[in-house]
Length: 435
Image: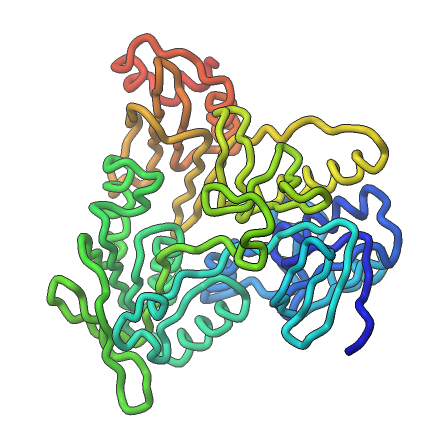
């Protein structure tokens, strides 16, 4: 066995958070040879959201190296050469199968060992597969998932092979909505299937969802709610041909895309660190219960200061910001200094067709729908406030300008009081503009 390779800092995982952490290390003056990124992916860190959007465009599709981090937030594009110039080692196509935090040792599937002084866990999430639940026929060809660029390439290849065919999208969340739009734009006959009473139930109210379901229906997307896929048929080649639903319906399918959620990848650390909310528990600097071990992005269960509770956030914005916070904290600690605590305002967004929405804050309490949510409107513009204990705690806006989106973020942060809910409904966005 080769001798272990030692680094001062190791980032485990090669997603968005790894790219932003590397950039912050470089800003903080990391020396050549001190930092390594170990990733099971075969490419340098990239902006994952592109995979469900620009990567699937019928014309002028996004391709690497175009969307390496940190272009998604208007930053510099870090090509593989950037890492070599900075003396940051990119250890790609390497899966770590064992992590021993006591001896600060990581072991790969090829039996290579890596040791570190400081570890950043940025392992992200794995996609939940129907085969995990033993769904009949779920191992057929062209039943696809989307998590990384390899998945996206499989999807692009299937879309080319089954041109203008029938696509069934299982799941009504982020991935379901964005991929249904992408498939429709690529001229597929698209049916969405999900068990909930409306789409994006973790965020949307029934009033918000009614708009998006209406809009998608007007684009020719069929929506079947309140049921799930219980089995699949395949032809002699093993290619999927049909989706069997619990309600008895059978849908013809050339491609099936499944978007039913993800699970934080924490299994390597079970029993070695404190856990909470399905993730690894950290402080406001993303340090875990084990000194010198940090956890960022999807896997971190961290104190969300604004709501005074421990939360886990699966979103690119938090992946970027938590990475920067952890690296700043690591370097400050070495210098005997401190950095301010992480003070995150939850933020989610999505784009599909000509639509674009943003949400800030917390979707709890009473919801107040404002604006015109008619799916046939030429330029739809509407939103929702969430009110808890007499204060606005969350705001959603479809069709907002950059300025308006900044305004709703301010409102969610400031939590202004609301005396009259009916008046708020009438005032709509004007209320936010006055805060």
